[in-house]
Amino acid sequence: MSRASPDDGMPLSHRHRRKLLTLLLMFTALFGAIFVVVNFFGARYALMAVEMALTLLTLSLLPVVRTTYHLRRWCLCYLGLLYAATIYALASPTTSVTVFSWVMIMPLTAHLLLGRRLVGLFSVFYLAVAAGLFFWRFGTDVAVSAPGATANIVAVTIWTYLFSYFYEASRESAEQQLSQQALTDSLTGLANRVHLEQAFHRAANEGALPLSVLILDLDHFKRINDEHGHACGDAVLKKIADTLREQTRVDDVVCRLGGEEFCILLPRTDSDAAYRMAERLREAIEALCCRHNDALLALTASIGVASTVKRGGHLDPMLHAADEKLYQAKFGGRNRVVC
Ligand SMILES: Nc1nc2c(ncn2[C@@H]2O[C@H](COP(=O)(O)OP(=O)(O)OP(=O)(O)O)[C@@H](O)[C@H]2O)c(=O)[nH]1
Image (cartoon, rainbow, N blue to C red):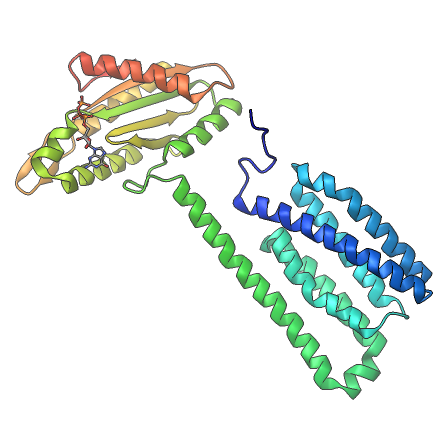
């Protein structure tokens, strides 16, 4: 059996951020080790001690980051340390002006690790402190004698910040669209089976009990396709989806299982209430006035109902139980509910 990954059930970005943080930790350890040597030969022993501590800490974090369920906290921790270390290096009177090149890539790193929401104030504050240090240390030399160079540094820093902000914004929206598509039935816009499973898992584990499931299957749907064409069949499925949406509560999850079969998950609903709801849906479908050209399409549905009061159950046995009731409804003459 394969081991569960800490990224299971998380957004796609989680997996990438874990890899990125691992890579950054490796780079930090490598550069930290190089700076330890450089600072040793430059006789900057306090800075060397900070670099050495940071390198050891970074190495010890590598196995933690690979398995943690609290990735965001570690990303914050890493950035906090990195920000503090670069500010310390910037403030140190013996470091060169080139240390400021690290400031420019910090917003990019922060956006890639944390997304947009947390980065804003965090990075703006950091950039303000770094700029203050820059002018405090080199204000009269670099800024006045080489205003072009200073303008370049400021421009590149702002450019990097804006570029990473807009890159992250479009990546977040693409990810949201993809996850939406992965959970939606493309024809009707209803939830699909994957979404249903997640919703059932949440409801069953968060105690939204009793929990009921309806399986609704249109009667003799094949005839509609055969007599009026597939496009008409598709239009009927969309109309049924709209009806189910209108007739259910916001907490209910309406899903298309496939073909002309739908499932409705009813949290906090016992079998009596589920039966009443199923009857209401059946009547609404029977009352639908669906036309194709001049023909009036007679639509009916059969519905099977299953309920549970047990916490932490699974969807498959519930679907199986509702499916058996559906079979009885079909066998009993269709256009009926069996509970
Ligand atoms: N238009 C359309 N038809 C579909 C879609 N998916 C499945 N079907 C059709 O749905 C029909 C289902 O037929 P059956 O399983 O025999 O069910 P039925 O005719 O409703 O009969 P009962 O369920 O026994 O009442 C088949 O003709 C499928 O081709 C779809 O996305 N669009």
